[in-house]
Length: 151
Image (cartoon, rainbow, N blue to C red; front, side):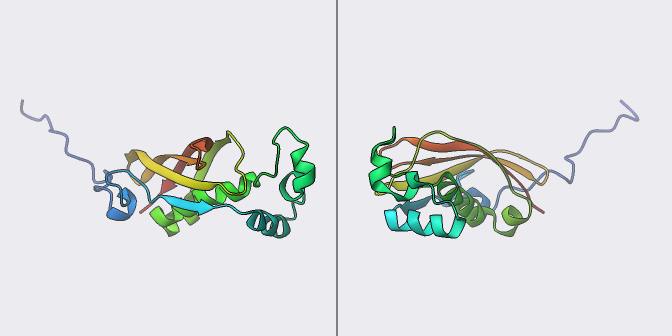
């Protein structure tokens, strides 16, 4: 039909994700971060953060609670998600990243925490990722989504 334009692919369509965006596991997979938690690490985080709740640092007190022992600060565990996203997206994550997460279960000394993620949506210069942390026993500690804008 004369005069009718055939739409072209807009220039704002993002290119295929780079290896950095795909991660080592393939298309859409972010780098995996594994961290072993120790009571000493939790105590050092308490000092750095100023959060001296005995649930985190006093094994005798924590044994009397519903948790049955000390647990890591939620923000310490969440830092592993941010480390994973920084490894995947670098400066773009640090400059523009946003998280929406839920804490699902506590991490304990002796756990190995694994942070994983995958790209679930890519449009223009905006990526959405599903993220989670699991304990060595497989419990979901944190889950949610991350958004990052890149150029």
